Length: 330
Image (cartoon, rainbow, N blue to C red; front, side, top):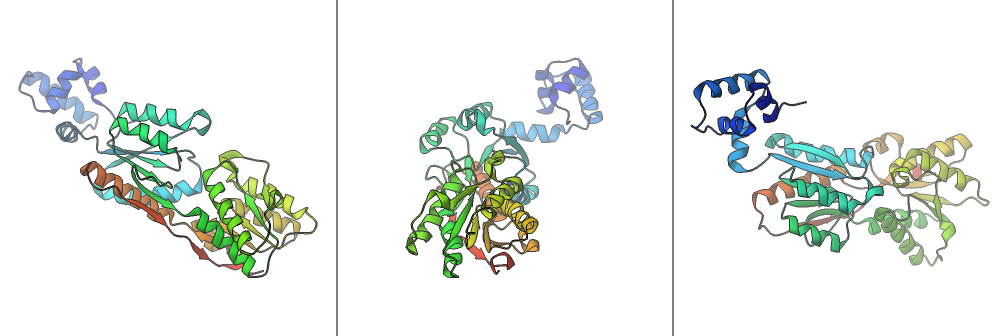
């Protein structure tokens, strides 16, 4: 763990204020004390020049990413884009997990109050407009990722259009009995992708029913897991008659779904969602969501907002692209 001025003050047996004055090059500290503190700092690998620069600029040279799920592959892709812009700027990135079961908004409020960073990336937190307005009182730079709001810089994705494109493709191939392999139905991305699914059915004059939506039993990480996909596909394969094709709400679920089909020696056309890096190697047809670009853009907006708090708000929504591979071409 990196040493702090508290560690240096303790080792030198002086106050934190004295250490701070030494690093800010104040003339009010005795020369012997100054040399002692600098020697200890050097031994601990502490860099007073960086501290002095931050003190002078009142900047921490750090941003914080708030995410609801640390182990999700979606956030891994987002993180790559964010890190690539920060590494050249010598800005530290801290990741803070937000527990959805404990109330997202309250946790975000507490984090912003502590002013740990120069700015904050809110990733897939999906706060309401009212909650986002309340965050304005903290007067800190925020950038939303996988979300859209006129109140803050934001980078989002048109999930409704993505759900429509995936479903319409399968319907257009003649598979009129298409089912939706769903995640947790209260999840905002799932609701939007389901709406796209419904829109495509409506266009083909197919009545929607609750039987079109199949869930796994496991709802960990909002059901975006291989296990949940496996469970849901087993339910689909037990139905009689079998559906013509499957639209899966995420690539991670699709991995489990494909294994279930292999285990049962059944092959249904399937289109998924996300286009994770693994999708190309397993032949997964999927809706491309530019996660790397989204992470890069949202972080770039945040850095620019920190430098210019009064710049025009930038909100951008990516359009979906359907990538066809072997899983849908049965």
